[in-house]
Length: 329
View: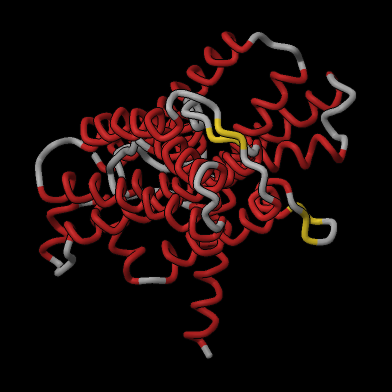
């Protein structure tokens, strides 16, 4: 009885600690929503809310995978280009070759897995930094996407493909269902599996994790493959929403994903992070982008604002880490 009460008390404390850790960005999100609801007439409109959810769907896929990568202590700059490669390949197979859309979708996702496999293999079995590895595969993937569509835009006219991007299940946009599935699966992996615990262990201290019997190379490889698969899925979503295959798909998407992850409290030094925080970060990024569009802010200044937000988030993470180190001393 006492053990049960102790466990419940511990769980309650963990829940409260989790809420407190996200309190700052929750307040920031609330302030943004209140400001935009006052400054614009359309922010709280149902159509605009659904539009925001559609916009963040792609980022949720990327950010969930990026959360695992960054908890691991890595980074993946190739995910935006994988969106282009996956989307262009899928669109070309359906529009040009008349291939069954389900098969084309599987091929598009598989391409993401292959890029993830390449990234993970090099990072795990060499000393080349993830930044350099994924920067290279980013250029390769973007180039292959251009080749796939011959530097043109490929239009797709397929009802199944269109449903994936713009369909509804009853009154619910199918994007919301995809978002929930990805969030739940990623949360289970990180919080309910030994693999998830291994990710945190390797990110916190790779050497100590190896001494405790964890195969760090295998963990790194699998995380990058999962990240590649999610990027491939994001490419299908992005392409099916616009019903075209363009080599410019996913341009800058990696920055939105990294911004959401860091805003959500995941440490760039690894070992710390939650999916709940990442989801809040995705919503903030989506609301921020949507709000700037509604306010008519020039796209050039939008890039400036997004960059400033990243710097702010990383700066807060640095201050947190510095505070922890001072306390230990």
